[in-house]
Each structure stands twice: as C-alpha cells, then as structure tokens.
Image (cartoon, rainbow, N blue to C red):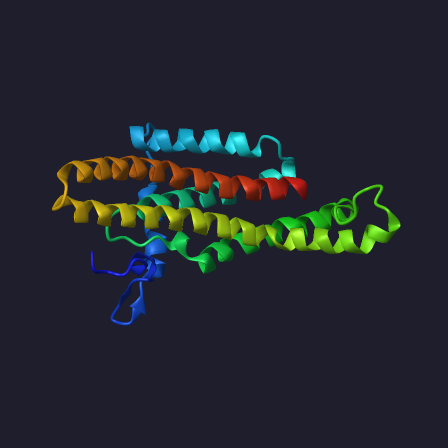
Length: 226
C-alpha cells in the first residue's frame, strides 16, 4: 500500500471546500422518525435501545439532571453512528480529530460545572478541599483539585480520539500486511486475514463502547453537579 498511514485521518476536501460538515450531518439521516401509528421493526428497535440507554443513564439523576436526557441521547447516537460509519472503506471518521472531540467535551463539561456552581455552590467549592486536610497542605491540594477539574474534558476527548485512532491504524497496518503476504505465503496471509476480521469485529464493539463511555462520563459529571 503506497498511501500514507495517516491519509484516512485527513479532512476530505473537494474543490478546496472541506466536507467535514456534511460528514458530521450525515449520521442524522440514519435515524428517521415515523408518523405512523404502528412503527416498523427498525424504528421500534431504535426506540427500545434509546429507552434502555436513557433509563440506565438517567435513573440516578434528579429532576434537573433529567432535563439533559435529550442532549445525552443525541450525543451517544451521534458518536456511535459516526464511529461505525468510519469503519467503512475510504470513509472519514470525525471522532479521530482531537479538535472535534474537544469541541464536544468542553461545552458539556462546562455546562455541568456551571450548573453545579449555580445550584450547589458550597458543595462544588468543597470538592477543592477534602475534609480534614492538614493546614500546610491546603494550598497544594486546592491546586491539584483545580487541575484535576480542568483536565476532565481533555481526558474525555483524548480517550475517544486515542481509542478510535488506534483501531483504525491497526486495521490499516494489518490490512497492508495481509496484502503483502498474499504473494509470499498464502497460509500466513490467511492467518493475518483472520486476525483482521476479528479485529474489525472488535472495532465495531469499540465504536459503540466508546460512544457509551463518553456519554456516561458526561452523565456522571452532571450527576456530581446537580
């Protein structure tokens, strides 16, 4: 394979115009709404999955936290569908871009933190200084807790970017090795292809799990601040 290893991570451009906006909007077409009294199997399965995820994530939240349900369900659908579409050949995965993941993580984290300072000011400030802290350690612990607070959205974005990028690179490398071994040793190429097939199945699971983990962590940050 002569193409660059990181070619698949370059934002697609046609006539000098970036297509990332169209790529981001495309997953919304995969979730149609129905106005019929009786839905078909696809929409019924979609609604069942949404109800299951929303019940599992939002059951521990209070009334204020449950107002975020629609946003969090939209988030998990967007990340999951984008990750899955990125596994198609010659496709582009927006979630491999750290800038985009930070663009999702920072506003959601900031909204949860601001909600906490508005509704539970004393409890939010108490997180910066654990109870029973010795007086000489107070300045250091306040700095450490502040850094840990501000690193949360970065950790969210880096986790998603690293997992999706690593999977794509592994598929690219093993696929290239399979093609190279095809003319050298058929048995070894068959073994490599089997590994590639298993890795692809694993990447489908990782794509959905990472969407769930990202949304779950945002939900936990919200739960701590409401």
